[in-house]
Length: 212
Image (cartoon, rainbow, N blue to C red):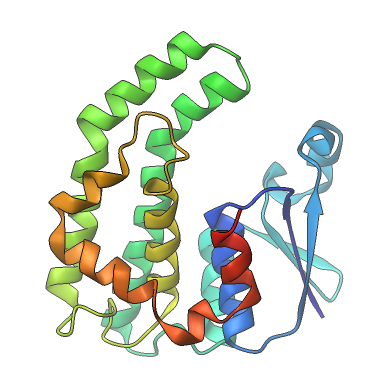
């Protein structure tokens, strides 16, 4: 059985993997590591990172790599080369916007420097937030005929886009007003559609993510 290992909190990097596997009916075990144990545990994981998948006692790492693997097993990738490029762009977009907001998170959580965190978050909101979600909306407009799914079929791209939009509109990121999505009507309608996509919302993982 596949084992997915991540920290003891919900985050898109692991959530897209477990949602994908669950949608595909792929059995897996989900192991959560306590965040305060990470300094000691880090050396035991490839690249010193999480999430990882353990398959036949072998660890595999890097979110994008794992997402493609899970999506292919769950038939949520695409055999069409150009459509797979669309999917990969969404995965890379998620990683890039995370890297842009991450310094403000680290300043607060690791450095305990709230003033620095506030300044970095202000810069992110001013310079990056709307720009990067506009990039995502532009990709949807160019890639999708039905505007329901990025490749016109539900895929790991939609799981990823939904999970990251959920994060940024949840109200859990200080200074990020959830109403920013109102400026992106196509993306907002798309997000609402995924939020009501029955095969997804009936999963226990979906309910757990959205209830915490």
